[in-house]
Length: 138
Image 1 (tube, rainbow, N blue to C red):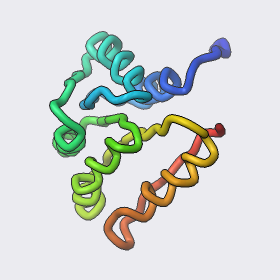
Image 2: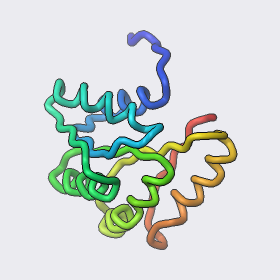
Image 3: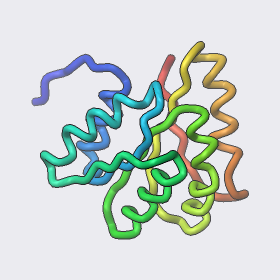
């Protein structure tokens, strides 16, 4: 039986992604999600995966779409402003039904800021496109 372990949210996202078989990470470092990139940069090569630091948020979303099309489970992570830049490529991925995974973070008051971010994550996409949204507790 695995021993329980206390960890921060960013570490939990990275560890969960690795446990789920993510082998490709493309991202642009933006606080507060930079820790995910740091962990993935260290751990992915150890499991035969690939880490790429992209030139911007738009390119990171495009890269995980490309990786997804090759059959790799892929991940990117960002913060509120970075999510705005990813939306066009996210819409494309949703319309074409490409499986992609991203994690979005917002600094500040967790309840108020989450209430502002959730509509942006769930409504700013092509109409009718299915998308799962998981929220951690503040």
